[in-house]
Length: 322
Image (cartoon, rainbow, N blue to C red; front, side, top):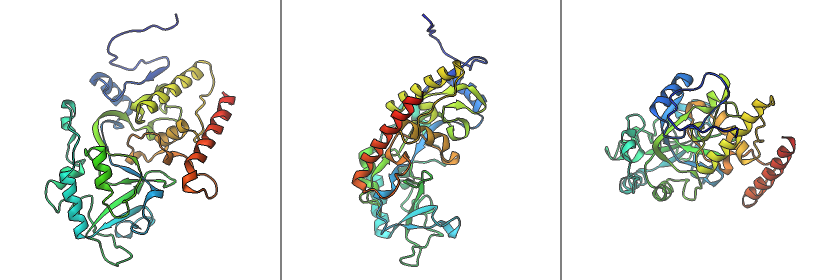
């Protein structure tokens, strides 16, 4: 009796009252225009996602830390060096790999400056060596020389438990990504935390715009939820909506919003999307790499079980407080 359902397009954001915006990845043009006015240049209409890998699954004997020309702290990037034969084989497999066909409304996603890596490879065998795989300014400490080509991995989080393949946004199928990217030296047995994709998606730059409660920093009565916040996946979007409902209820009751602790799955996801590097922000699904590290040394095969046990304990403690 206290709910009124109205069917129709929402073309603007209400100027008063509490508002939850959960318009999803295909937000209408009119609402997207209103959101653009609200968020400035921090609203995006396509995601161009490169694969992310688990740090503890990399072969550390084949990769090396270095920033181009020795700039930075020295451990900003991990580098996977390729010799000429490895490079040529990699390019050949990129060209032969099966791609995901674009749907009609996604046809314009291939814009210059954010080209799929396989599309770059199709422009000529040397194109990648002068693009995302250029070795200039990177010296392999084991040989004392620049490799023929390099794939750089950039830390995805502060704990450096996950690494992003820089410039490797792709439309290869998931199976082909696993097969082809495991040809890269150091990634032969890698665990993919997230696979690459390029598709139509409306989302905001949450690190610069949202509190962990999903409230807009500039107008806390506005709460975002679901895929528009930069969470990926059905379960993640539903959980984001659950938290948005809790936040709205707390506001109406004059209470502070209660965000789950980062040791829990939802808390870890919220901590990531609101604290990630805003400059390189891309949508993220929940994964073990988001969780804070366990104290002390834990065997790799026991790590996930320990993380789950800690998460459940933290969840129970949080539930007792709300």
